[in-house]
Length: 255
Image 1: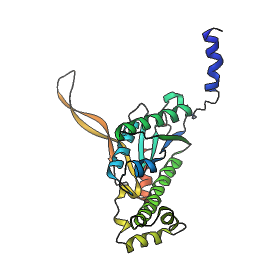
Image 2: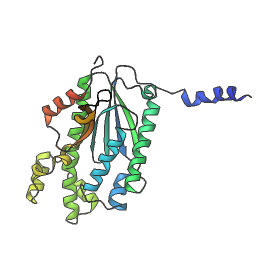
Image 3: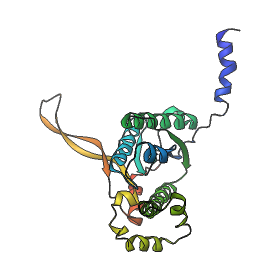
Image 4: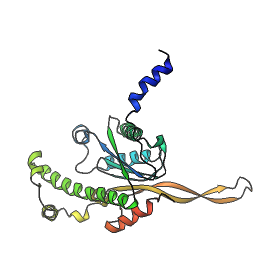
C-alpha cells in the first residue's frame, strides 16, 4: 500500500471525532492541576492554605498561556485552577476542541514544571458560551467558588494546625453555613474579611494599554507609541462591579 493511501486510511481514526467550536461562540478554557494536593503539600511543602511562591508560579503560568499563540483576552486563577477567555474570533487550530484542550494543557504543564523544577500536570476543558452574559456568569461562578474554597481552606487548615487529623478536620465543616465558618475563624483570632483579596477572590490577568517612547522611522521625530502589556490584578472588583469589569473585557461578535 502506498503511503498516501495508508495515510488517508489511518488518519480518519485520529480525526473522526474532531469537534470544532462554532463561529461566534465565546471560548473559555478551564485548566486544573492534577494531583496538586500531594504535589504542593506532601512533596514540596508549600505553606497552607496559601503560599506566595505557589501563587506566583500560577501567575507566571497564566502569563505564558496568554502569550503562547492564542489570542487570550483575560486570564483568571485561584488555587490550582486557571480560566482563559479567548477572543471570540480566535481561529487557532480552526477552533478544534481536541487541539485547544491538548495544546493548552501541554503548555501549562510544561511552563509550570519548568518553574517548579518538578512535574506538574494540568488537564483542560472547553466551555462554548453563546453570549456575553454567560461569559460574565462564568467568571462570577469561578469568583464565587474561589471565595468558598478560601473559606473552607482557612477553616480546614486552622484545625489541622491545632493537631486535628485530616478526615476530622474536613468533616467538621460539612454543611456548616458560611457565617458559622467565619465565626469559627474569628473565635481563633482570624478575621476572614481581612484575608488578602487574591486568596478570597482569585487573581485576574489582562492586557492594558500604555505609551512607550519611540522614533518615527520616516521623520526621525520622537513620538509616543501605544502598546499593550499584561497586568496582574490581585484585588479584583466585587460582585456587580466584577460583572461590569468582565463586561468591559468581553468582545461582541460584531466588534
